[in-house]
Length: 234
Image 1 (spheres, rainbow, N blue to C red):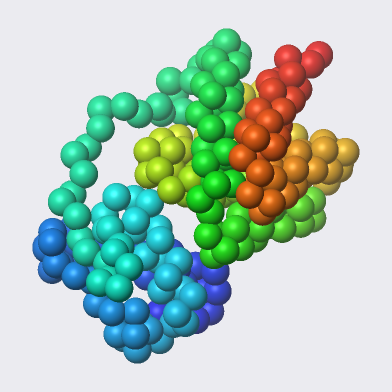
Image 2 (cartoon, rainbow, N blue to C red):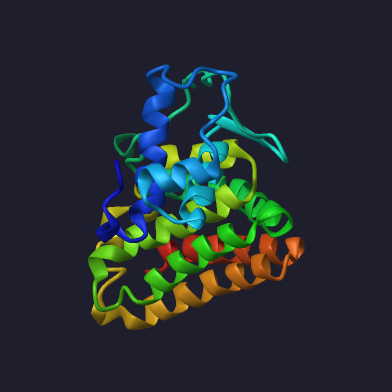
């Protein structure tokens, strides 16, 4: 059944969900090969680019593994992890600062790996999130999601599913906290803040695009360190 073309950028996400549902339902068992790229293009009415991005996301989620010349094969379902951080657990200002300290260590290394391993398709996904963030001044309600998607896309480009799984488990709450500080961080009236934050994200993007791992680590560390400093500002 063809996907809804009106969804634009959501096509890859919807294809991922369709294939994931088949995998989780056992319709495509561990060890079995996914339908070929051509078959998926024909069945869902999408482009090869959408199919490749969807398979890349399934790889990042640890659901499939791709072998050059052989195709993509379903893996055994990963065991669930007990580690999770709910928004309700991050209650105090100290919790928020600790969360950023944790993210600095995790995301700086993820950015460095992304610079080394990213594909052209993954770089495009990071770029799209950056464009969405830069254009969110007129639609402040979309800024938090765009910010989160940028960080998630960088983690996906690291090629290590544990980075992307971890950030996905946090969700946009990792950007939004604490509410008392950030409720109006992304508003039209605070254009200076948005410009500064977007520039910091651009520096990460450029380093990943240039495949400069050291610069990518430094840019991500600087961005998150600046975020920490902004949270401590009076």
